[in-house]
Image 1: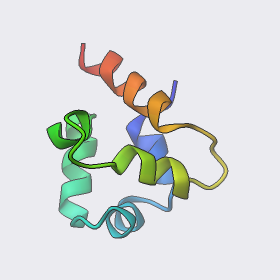
Image 2: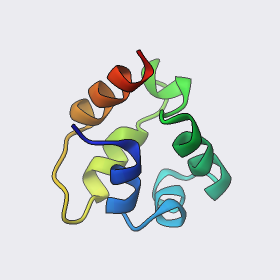
Image 3: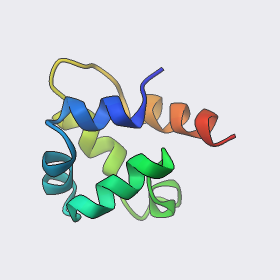
Image 4: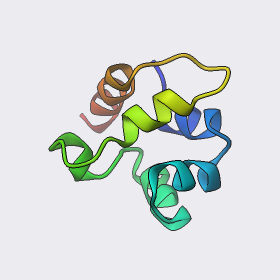
Length: 75
């Protein structure tokens, strides 16, 4: 199971994740603190999980794997 922290680190950390996703570094830190992506990811308005999966280096995971692991953390 992939964690959000692992996914963010696999793209180079919060600053790189923010750059790839087009959000602020603060937004990524909020994701990490909450251990989940924003609501918009689950309603289909954004695609941060897909971006993180595509940009990951040294860690293979899919968007679905990341979202499923985050759902189990929130439960």
